[in-house]
Image (cartoon, rainbow, N blue to C red; front, top):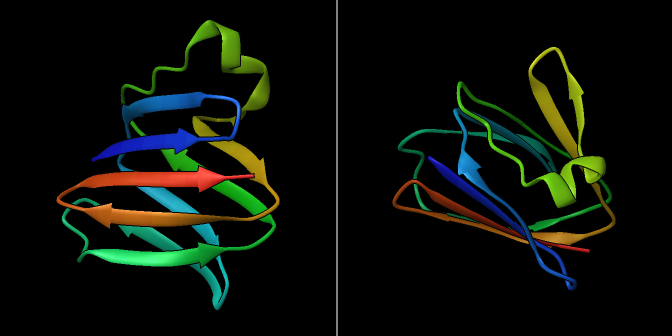
Length: 92
């Protein structure tokens, strides 16, 4: 699936991902390929993702941490939408 993370400053990520974990308003949840369409509010926490071919633009690499192939990005709040294997995270 495609993961796109958009902040007020820029689109900081557009890459393929296999697994995405998110801090939802009702608790943490995970998205896999072909997940049903979903829209959810996000709370403070980490957006985590894994994939075989993660590509992060050099200018935004410092915003992400990598722990043994699992990348994470800290957010204060946001919204997530997934439809047709395309995930958009609008994050603060």
